[in-house]
Image (cartoon, rainbow, N blue to C red; front, side, top):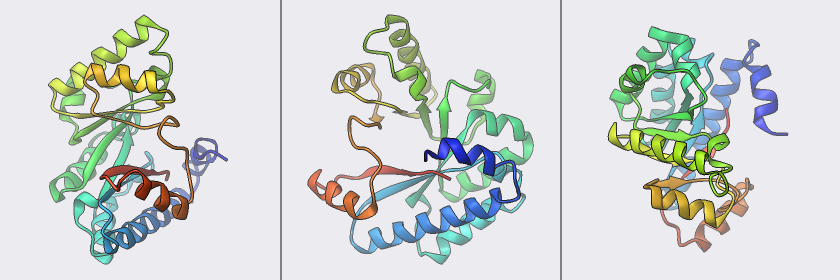
Length: 216
């Protein structure tokens, strides 16, 4: 079952906080294991709107890093545009604290929210992840290509690192590369897999540093 099916339901219940706490701890524990094995991997974890309402969220993330003896850059937190805008000042306060501590922050599903350019410039994030709904048809749809190209140019001009989501073909990956997109993820590269399978896949790729995602 895709996290997209059950996480929105969890977010509406009292389980949102403990669910994210469990996923973050599991992600950090795995990242610590990889660090001990010499694998240079940044692990991305999705954060829900409900978490940004928690006054101690940033503190708990930093405590988790300390608990697992991890540097702040070992974890990247993905937050949607809508989650940030809906939670206003409290969300910005939590994200600013995390950013100041060195935790990488990414704007997930970019383009699907309703943030203005003024708001985008205020966000303490360093990564923009272009939603797969815009990427899916760039091979055959000139308007989609133009839109994605504009999003990449804007994001780069504002100083963000760009990641394209939902890349399923080599042709799409090539188009994005020509547009100046620095990173991409999707089934063209690999499908979700168990940790043991990932380890073998990672080694087969040459063990180059990359970002891995965990849904929360």
